[in-house]
Image (cartoon, rainbow, N blue to C red; front, side, top):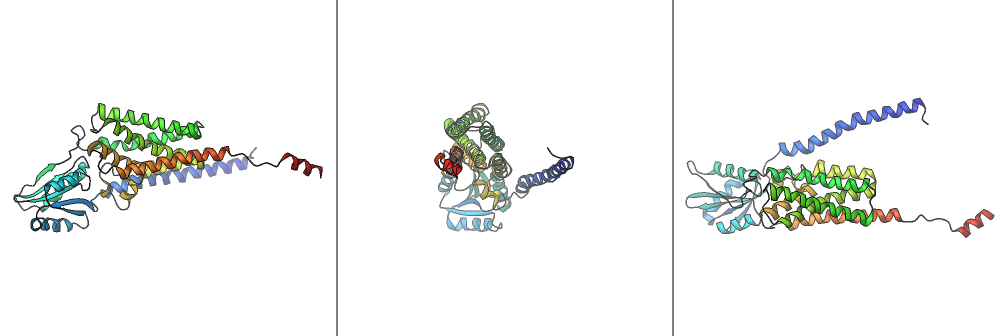
Length: 335
């Protein structure tokens, strides 16, 4: 039993920990969420320039003058540029025509980027010349600003954290834990697509492929949280939630594009489950799976590593403690 002085000292330390910890967490969250949003701007954003060399070269020079805003890809004609947009190689393309520059965009890839490209090309067009704009891969009419897809990142991350935490708190281990994580991820995917696709109509891809994408995104998070908890104990849940929610969510670029975030935030975000999940969902829902391999591999890696860690943690806890053989113990007692 603690003496009064010891109890008071313990209470003071706990008060000090709360007083210091809460402002630190809030400051960290504000930095993670507000800094990328306040510094949104194109950085090496993939953009195509198409047309005859003599006509396309001036357009390319004008775009390259924007201090590293664009990464220019050259294409022979409009058809090639359209193909690059549909393959998610570029976010848009400027085509040199006899009537002036023509802009191809893909609002399904990022409505914000499509709007930015319209402004950038209009500013550089000759005075009095209207820039024709064609949306090659348009965003759904039910979600023209991409707000619903961007808003789906945090709920998927929270669902994964909740599933991983529940498995840990309920004491599930080994195969049972893996079964619970996989089963919950599948049901989350079904529920999410039922709402986003069947009801709201903000997704337009193959229904079961979208279920797979959202389920894999959830499993990547839940397996990572449960795996960290299996190795580190309850503190592992906090570490997993910090990485996924406080870093992965604002670094995902889901509401804009990875190339619109400060470096190296955009790149880091694509290696975390929320960013990879948002990219995968865009690919399977609007681009027939184009450029889906990279984010799918990232999510699979998180899921496999997390589930493997869950099994490893269970095996380590089942390992018997080495005890002294009875015969040797009896001889030791005899002496």
